[in-house]
Image (cartoon, rainbow over all chains, first blue to last red; front, side, top):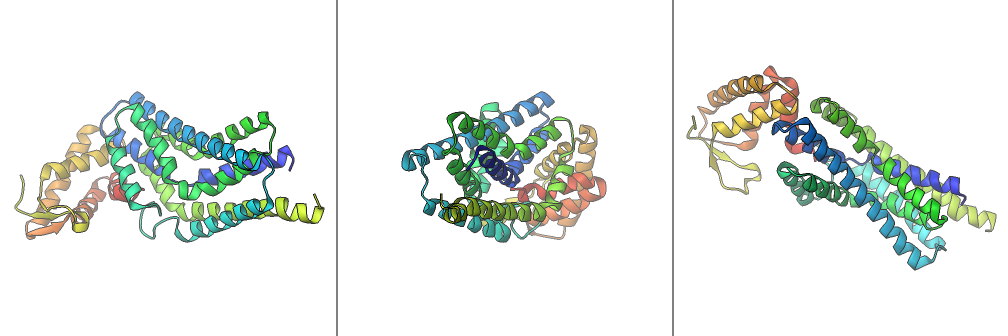
Length: 237
Length: 94
């Protein structure tokens, strides 16, 4: 797999990661609580920035830890069975996203364990310091691990085959792209946009986002399968 | 003014409590402020909504907190639709 194809796979995986909505929901709630508590605009910006940085740090940690683990296990020569299993995981997660991602009710409630949702809700309400917002960013990424594990796993498998410079670049590319949806909400909130309008957009487009995330996972799984399994079988390398 | 109305909490897992106007008032003000409504206007709207909810409560000895939220959102909608939308969304965002 050449570098361009590897980076394209990482970018697509990150884009799928960006379409998952738990962190965006938490950021929206955090902004709402901060504005309604009559805190200053600079405080709002500090909290939301810390949240986004926290989410970014956890993404980097997850991706690099998993890559290190895979590198130690497979020494850069990932067996085809692992690629095949990872493609299966992508398809499985895609089907779950299509079927379950949003709860069948009003709003943008997600199919994450209710305990985690309640914890994030309560923490959001009591977040006053930048350090707490940073921690909330870390937790929100862990909360959606059930869904983001598939794109992170594929990206890690691709990363371990790259030269060292491109491994670091790949982690950077993945992190920046996966944070895009958070960055958009952060910019909108920071520039004084109405939270109601943001939440309304999210609610009215939730099934599209759900469909796009599921389809993205299927496309990614198909592409990786063709490239890694069929390509090496038919091409003989 | 607190009415002698028992509020059954969400899911019935927590103890019932007496209706507290201040608590409702605070939540309406928060919803209005979170859509960047000026503070004075938020207070006026919250007063109006609380009055309407209290009129609705007068014939009822006990209601659920969910009922209160629905009725408050319905009245808030006529004063500030965007705040009402966020008020309704509060528990169904995550």
